[in-house]
Length: 456
Ligand code: SF4
Figure (tube, rainbow, N blue to C red):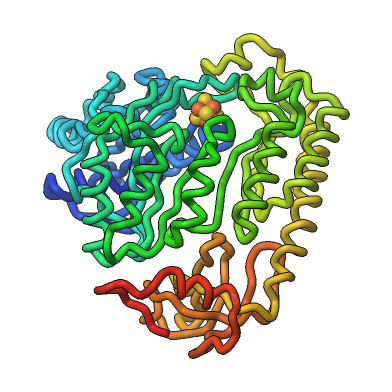
């Protein structure tokens, strides 16, 4: 979501006449888009601002510095006090449309160093169509929901991104069509809880209906989304997914803990049992799906027994990937106000090391099962070192490394997997897949559509 906000801000600045440069030492304006979901992410802002101050002192280069995103929303004018004399503009998450205007204003009063602050909630989730300067050559992010009403006790999002607002279905469809027209054949639908979607301009349109409608867009080949909430998952959606071949066989479904007791303290409104039942239903309906999740260790009051529950849930669910974090209190979040951060740091470290070791074993084994199989890969990246080394992703979101020319980026290629590690697999492109492997099956379900760049 933050990446997409950056794309939208880059587009707004471009529309106002600015040009992007890759070197901060060259820039007249530096925008730092921030994340405050973890303390570590927030600390990076202060490091970056410190670097800019050094740059200004050493080279006499003093660009307009704008801080945007969740830390800006959270800290407001107080942000400038922590590192005075660096920041010129502070824009919250809901006011990014005003960024170009504020930057212009700051540029016209050099040396003032009193930051212009706009953190007012701006509730219009629409943006001019095509405004995002998309950074990914093959896939497009498309926001469907902003904000969240869940108030999980560890989470800062409802305070930084505001309450839940659904984007009109008409805007979403226009955005997807524009992305496809720009040559991107994969979209990723974004929202804090995507499966809570209800179109404001069509009350009968749920998330399932929206995905079914997007599925009909010609030229679109893959649909991803992040993230669904376990408590809003419906059997109807799973059944629909089964019949919609463009919907990728990957579900990122945050669980956060394997202990029902901790989940209750987190205000997650789902239990360990419900989550595991859901996993079983998903596996039965969509046997080829890859699951991933988010996990927090060391939440206040987490005992060894609670952590054992987390480990056993991970073993049972067999995730392809886990984003795991040590708990850190976040400003405004309920847990930071009401629950002491009582799990000692060494215990948090011990638990996260154990969790990551278990997960590494699981994903090593899952990736090893791909060796000898043929998978369909959307090539998206060339290696920085050698442009004959490419990588891409399968429908299951598994990273596949494959040799080939850089022109292959944006194409779907069948790859025979030859070796694997915990984090990705390597293979060779094959011209024809004589077997009835996964890639063939997927191609049969998803015929080549007019205007697609499909090479096999
Ligand atoms: S569902 Fe919970 S964790 Fe996710 S954004 Fe909303 S409050 Fe945060």
